[in-house]
Amino acid sequence: MTASVEYIPVTPIEYPDEDGKPMAEGDLQRKCLVYATTVLDIYFQNHPAVYVAGNLFIYYEKGNPQSVVAPDVFVVFGVENRDRGFYKIWEENDKTPDFVLEINSKINP
Image 1 (cartoon, rainbow, N blue to C red):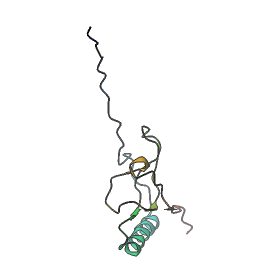
Image 2 (spheres, rainbow, N blue to C red; image 1 turned 135 degrees about the vertical axis):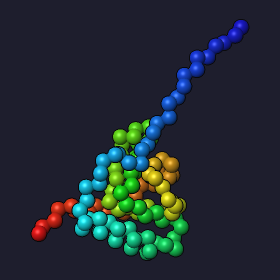
Image 3 (cartoon, rainbow, N blue to C red; image 1 turned 90 degrees about the vertical axis):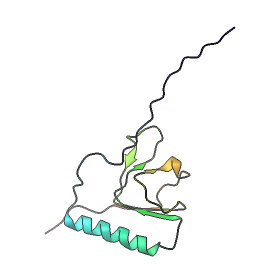
Image 4 (tube, helix red, strand yellow; image 1 turned 45 degrees about the vertical axis):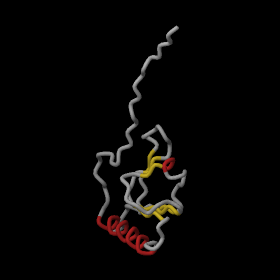
């Protein structure tokens, strides 16, 4: 007796590292973002298990690329400090950001 198994190819789920939309930040917001990430990078430079990033996609639900946020600045304790194109929580031992900074885009002249 021979059993047959139907092969169904699995299409990999893509998690983009950009949404194709321009970043709509003014000069003040950009300067604050760069300043915040730079200061945090310097502060944690001797801590290999602290990750600092800014404007990076965080995917929080495996299998659902629409479940994404992109904080202006964030810090995660307990994960490797290395370059990433995006941050998938389930690939980082379910570590979510410990600190998030959103920069207000409204400027009062």
